[in-house]
Length: 355
View 1 (cartoon, rainbow, N blue to C red):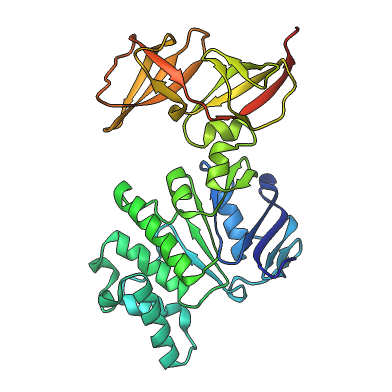
View 2 (view 1 turned 90 degrees about the vertical axis):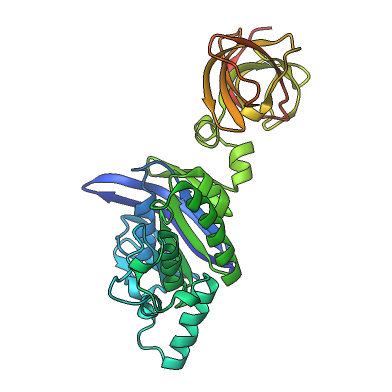
């Protein structure tokens, strides 16, 4: 195992009442990396966090921290001995303690001068040193979240775990704070793993993201690769917005589709005449009144500067297009479009068209 690996999960499995909730799951986090488990409620992501923290026994597999096995079937290193920091969804601050004392809570037994220095350092890091004498109810929700982060970072943990850390905040604050938290973790050099169902949070904060479904990680990768190089149709449809349309690969590695003949960088080597599903993102479709290709508007979602249109092609396929909102069209209208597909993300369906 590389000395640079802080966290390694090896084929871990966990169940409640004989119902498997995590299945044969593996991942690694390098020193200083921020990872994210992304998925809908009930997919098993919080259970993974609890097994890493030591709150749950494993049925199978192993968990390593800094090269040391801390969990396996029949063995569980107690949570207090794992040197892991936790930030919970509800922050779990003590209402009767000041901000300073909340951050100091995890430093019991430390020499006083060092304790004071650590707390001040952590509060400076999250921009709350001037609020140290206040109580949790006297500061905002965003500030409370940063206090919880400071408390978790003050003991200088090997690993920081965060469970839906931004879910209690309004949308604007959530976006701003997620980027602030990333900056803080990077400045501190902290290795972290968090769980969320929000793709924007995952993309804003994480270096590596694991898309979870039904207790398994379908793809553990960068945000860029999840979006542009999904390994399966399920990932393609789950990450970002887009549609899968029918296509056939020709002799020139082009794809014949209801949008016309598409020529781009193909993500997979595919035999000629293979029938495929092709991923089309909203940014791949350009609104063009002069285009001979027409599509019917069947749905519109106004987004301020843009409108996301769902369009019906003559082939029966549906695609989406993100169009400046001054181009205002209603369902039932036909508009001109042309494709600008740079990456041909294709998934063979296992059928070949006869020549």
